[in-house]
Length: 105
Image (cartoon, rainbow, N blue to C red; front, side, top):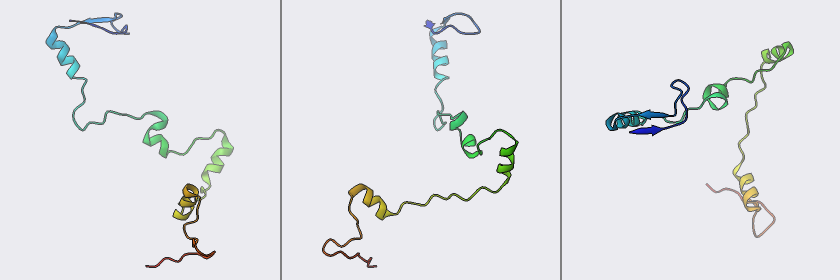
C-alpha cells in the first residue's frame, strides 16, 4: 500500500510504502485511548500562563510589582440589573403604583 503525504523532513520523500496490516497498525496507533484528553493548550492559552502575573520590562516595574496589588474583586451583577438590561423594565417596581415591591418569604 502506498501512502502519500507531504515531504517529510527526515526521509526527504512524500510517500511511505506499507503492507496492509502494517498500515492499519500505524493508523490505529494514532487513535487516543478512551478518556485521554485530545486537546492540549500551549502558550498563552495554557493554565500555567493564565495564572502567572504579566511581566513588565525595566527596573521601575520591579518596584511596582513588589508592592501588594490592590484587591480587585469583580462585583457580581445583581439580578435586578440583569433583568433591566434584558427586558428594559424594573422588576421591583409595582406595575399599578409608583412604589417598590417587597419580597415576601
